[in-house]
Image 1 (cartoon, rainbow over the protein chains, first blue to last red):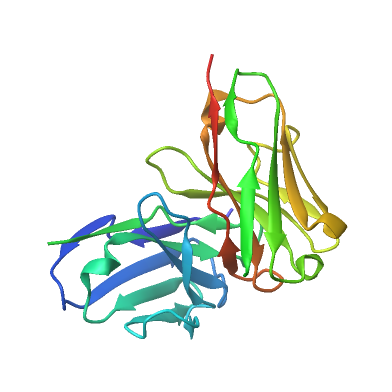
Image 2: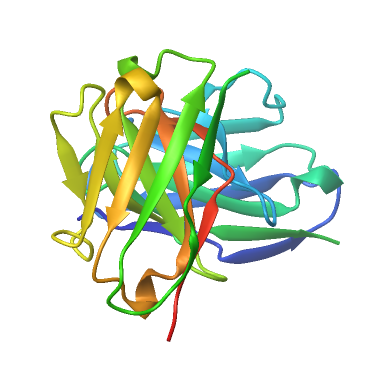
Length: 107
Length: 119
């Protein structure tokens, strides 16, 4: 099973800050790494697919990079509505796995 | 409108069974693999099971293999999760989700249905 480890677990940030969340895989997932946003009492929402591909309707301040075992989700100029939990997810091999999540709090 | 809607959750005693359903609409259901993902109270996301677009291939997380069965009825645009021998640790919100492509991201999610296993 591929273990995904996100960093940090929690971050308190101010609006307009730049935020970086990392996801490290226990073995290579190639480019099959995706990012989701989940707000309280909502289902997850796909933000970035295949490490860096943008999703229609997702604000351009969200971007992703990386390959192999190290990946990054970047949020430029954070907005209040970005308060949420963020998860990375690998679909390179079964069982599919998620990172433990990163909770962003807006100050 | 592209959506997936789960149903069938509830409160059940340990050892009992429950069947979840997920009805899809707004896209060609039979073209895509589909999955169940759960989230225990206050915890992160956990992939539970997946099934290929034609139903010929199924996969499970180890902790549910032999107890849960994922199936689909393509003419009815419906995904199912039959859960037997339920345990308290199966308590969670269960989401259904659609694959963007084979071994791809999950681009459409349902709103979730709550399963509580308790005596």
